[in-house]
Length: 481
Image 1 (cartoon, rainbow, N blue to C red):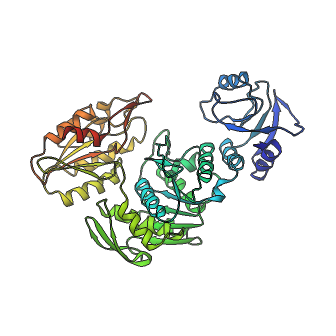
Image 2: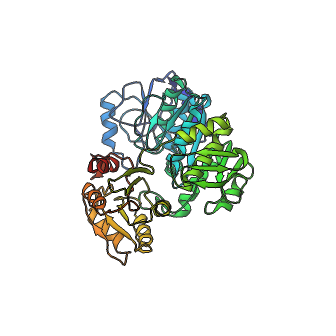
């Protein structure tokens, strides 16, 4: 429940209140109006709902339909003149976030909140943190791969960071389920779209940065992408930063007045010995750690998660146990073919993460490498060139280009765009399941490797705006075996 007087007070403190209008005229409300529901879906309203008009494609008829369903009041950046009062604000996204906090009882104050940002590694790091904190605490998890608000039931989120109304409702559910901590991935879009506006994190981790999510519907430039990533640092009580990341000096200067730890190269918290399934760390987490995920970058993700959890009440024993237990669906999952060749399933979906994946696989597998790869349609268009330029440097890899969430584009056209940057021959097979089977049929010995990159554990393909059922790369490979 929330009263109109409380809403106005919140908005005025944020310098976001303009006026209340009805049919083009100033409207002076005498108070007493109370809302028991908040929504941004015009199909989900009652006469006691506070409705938020958001989105560039919002149409007046949506609001008219809501009025017919009984809507009495709404908040918007403009007056749609539909016969009911509108509270006009300068920024609807800021209003949504702050009002949602209050409506759901400020659940953020009842949880220790840990956030991960970076171009890659957010999900893996969040999983490490979840297992670490699960040893002695009761964490909830908001992740691209899986979300749990009670530690028992898991579901996939539609957004890396949910819309603010959904986010604070989820937090309230976590509090009601007696969770002590919340681990979440915070995307650059979360700040660009103000989904976490007004939220202060107890600890946050900046894993890395490389060009990604740059395009017409995302960030216009790398500078904008990097800037929105860095906003997390300004809204955290303590930060953990990878000292080996690109543009580290910019982030280092930014966090100088905040409690912080650095990890990685040129820091005291680093990996001093790295094996396939174990590593030894120095600094605050000094000791030996078993790990199921191969690759030094995964070991560094574990180190980052451990340092963050240490600040939030985890012990070194918790950290060791949690890292050893962590598995991530679609992240460096390994299958073995009858001929001994390995099949690697990984979510690597941009040039930088694919570079690291290829390096790790070729370090352990010295035979033929066959790569199955696609690029998404209608987003992240810069990845296509990145993939092509990278693979042009690896003529020893057999490349099969295929579909990966082509959406409203032709997957063959996307594949040809990638191939245009590659001077050696590549194969294009639009059907991803068929591409996987062909790749696996090309192996011949124990040292060979098939890499299925991009989809990870996704059990769908986005085609024409719809998520079509897809068994998943791992399942297809397992069935072929």
